[in-house]
Image (cartoon, rainbow, N blue to C red; front, side, top):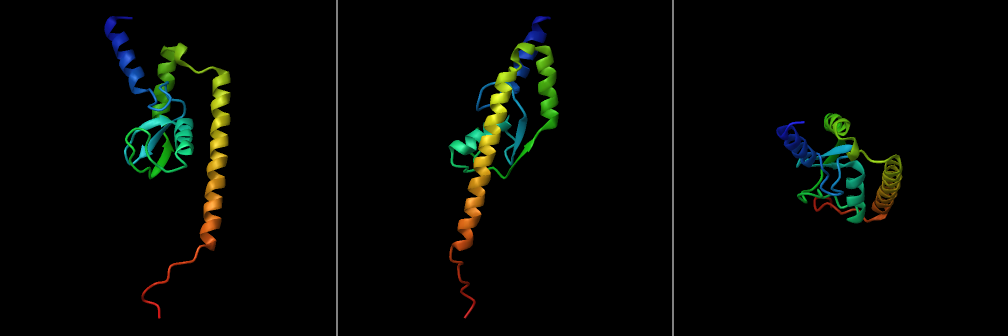
Length: 130
């Protein structure tokens, strides 16, 4: 490889690095509205550590939605083909997927609890109703 190719790969690697785990993206997601990217498991862990208060781990803006980014994942896979040493081991992938499942279950339990509690809270009275 030429020097410029190496620099370009280094720059590409930097652009494909998660701001939470500092590794190459694994199941990259797009955060709306700021369009920052990170690993799906990292955003779940970040939200869990912050009591599921939806703030972007990079800029702290309020998260409106999180979506998997298949186009970015394709770029990551191309990069991993070019630099296989950056690929996560099968053991690490299994650990990440278990963490994802655990954090998702915790989030769903919290959401279910929140909806249950909300059902029992007194509803505000409209000032327009006699």
